[in-house]
Image (cartoon, rainbow over all chains, first blue to last red; front, side, top):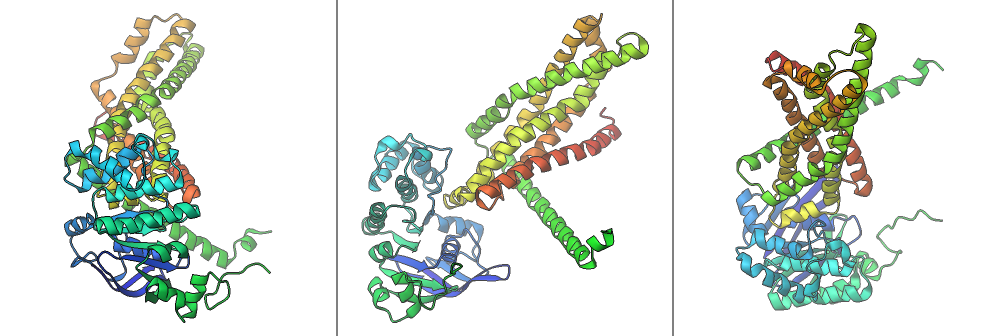
Length: 253
Length: 273
């Protein structure tokens, strides 16, 4: 389980996260929604240890990663995987080398079994082994995202963090990625935290949704509750309306 | 319009604040770059070196820089020979000191400097652009999440590639520069190759060569530190990578040219000359 307690993050005088407190339960798909620039990705990067919070605690399986030693942090990070918004596959490496990268560094798998595991993980995300020798630049956006998920699941993390998993994909590919995230939870018992703007995908893949607004949690509930809530801020976001309490920037007349 | 009108008190204050801000940014940058260099040497001394990555970088930096280093040093060698030969013929009615002047100027100064300018432009820019692109596309963050230290994985092979290949390129630049000078000298004046070469080498000692190679090592260090630091700290998308690359080349060149005097002063005072 991951426990977030009173998490604050500031950049200079700008407070991005203002005291967030919530838990991520085991084997649930938690989706964090919110406006662009509201700190969703910052929250995710704090949770995985890429950014240090200004104050507060992030407790992963009993280890507070904001206060633990570097060795403990490295050990805890082995349980976590991160799928980046633009996939962040290493340009200079082939897809095979990308997927094998985490296996070599984070697992004790013998070299002789790495090839088999890479093919298995690519198959798990619906990619054929004939792309193994290609460089990331040869793949489409959807294939890159799936290859990035294969790279992450290869070393069997307990938690996977997805930064905008469906952004930039066509509706069908978005649905495929949503199905894949659900499939990984069911098949591999992976706990997922995803940040997204895409309400259709969020509704499909989430067991629970939290909404961030102005650095605070304004909603925590199931997708069905998000659809029927009386909270006008949440309703406006879920419905994607320009009218409502969330002030949209309008420079046109 | 008088100068007083242009620089009002408020503008002067703003200019001073801007200067202080830039100064503090540069000092902070120097601190970050130094700590990265120390971390890199820490990994190297602990033996955390990927042989395949290092060899790849050595080929990229050394072998692929060779044609342009060769062409430039050959051309510079020819020009120096022509200038010295013409000047000494005008002054003394015969071309004297060509080999000696060429030997000293190439080994002590021009060899390391020519190589530094080319490597800063070719290799330094490539390192910053590559690492900068990795930074803005979150590949550096991806390395962290996959249990890999970016300094160990990216900076160590590039440092080693630069430090190992730079002195070699400098030596090649010296030899090719001398060859260019030799060809011009023996074709323009009545000087034999043996005479030219003995003039070049007679007054040199091992210390002369050390002088050039020590400079080459420091210049390589400057290029590697600046390029990796600028790349790993790039931000702001494609524009940020472009700015980081320009800044990397400019800073390397400025540091190389300004440090050259102080390095020469130090080496001469230690008797390495």
